[in-house]
Image 1 (cartoon, rainbow, N blue to C red):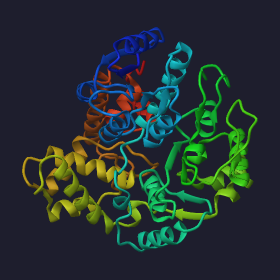
Image 2: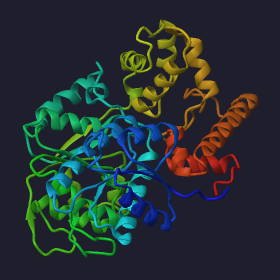
Image 3: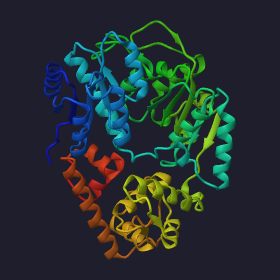
Image 4: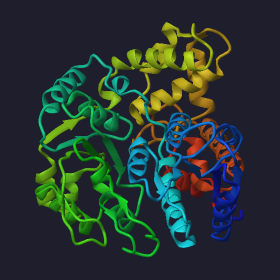
Amino acid sequence: MPRPMPSILVADPLAERASELAEMASRAGHRVRRVPSATDALAALDTEIFEVVVTSDQLTDSSGAALVARVMERWPGLPVVVLVPPDDPRAQDELLRAGATDVLTPPLVAEGVNFVLTKAISAGAASAAKPPRLPAPNTALLGEADSMRTLRDLLRRAANGTVTALIRGETGTGKELAARALHALSPRHLKPFVKIDCASLPDTLLESELFGYERGAFTGAVGAKPGRVELADGGTLFLDEIGEISLSLQAKLLRLLQDREFERLGSRRSQRIDVRFVLATHRDLEAMLENGTFRLDLFHRINGVALWLPPLRARRDDVELLAREFTRRFGLANGKPNIELSAGALRALRSQRWPGNVRQLENFIERLVVLSDGDAIEATDVEREFVQKPEFLTQKTEGLDPTTQRDVPSSPPQRLAEAVRRAERAALLGALERARGNRTVAARVLGVSRATLYNKLKELDIDPV
């Protein structure tokens, strides 16, 4: 299968500049579609799959920040790069704080455009590998289990301090949402909450995103840019997946945490910052300490307040509470305000192990709501979805049937296993066809990580090229 070109959507009312940008991107091997307005951009995103959106802060029917917000709401994880005037650094900072992945300042230089697009595609690929997160912090923190009550109490008590917080837990338990809740409860809640995903970028790009850079600091740095540390000044900086960074970058992060000082790449001037650091990881940091892949001094520095998020299987009684909330929310979003889960459906949901935790439950409920014909979701609907569209596991769960997440004997019936294999193969081929062979986009369509997608392609003898 031929490797498709990355797709770029350019939304800019200035035809000459849009044409220049499209030509630079095309020469770099990207497929480009141009539209003149935010309305046209949103319509294009509804019908096509793009890996980066490049827009202007001078749209006739929307501000750049408003379009960024719309894209973040409807297509979480899709990178947005905004064209801004070179003499307006305040606008650059505001757009980055609003969620823009990056900015470009005219006059456009091919080297700088290629650098920004490459970085945005890399960030988008990592984000696409993750299923959508819950949109509201309070939802992730719903629960009457003792572990959730303890967590909420710790969040309240830790919020007023400045000590670094480390949030730990399996994938899908809501670590980012706990970080946002910590910020919202703190005296810094009116200041920026800035996030950087340490797993989404290679070290060189991660360092420039974290600390910023001066013009000419490296190839592609055609203008100065503040880093996420600067953008978070006075507020909270959330470093997600801290267990993924290299030892060399760990050393630089340690200095930042200790001294509250940093330098932009290419600069010799130190800058002081006032930032609350919140970090998160699903990795076993103690094991990483033993094998030498995580620094002991950094571990002690970040482990000021440790917050553990329990897996959903450890609070089974909360499944019903969460499922009802997701049903209500997705019912309203899909024009089904009266839809409900029957008692049998709730029992069926509680019987599952949910290795993907709250995130997996949310995605499953959304599918049930969308595919339902009436106002009641029954147990048969739940069982049918588990068999017909098996979940890809997001945690290592030995001894679980991949179609139901239940404990089963080591040799499941052959006919069921073959049915699951055929269903998985059909889902993979359908996603690859929809994504025009782009494995990153296919992972986004399926709601799985790239690693899971690659493993499934290999397991089912599907050519991933």
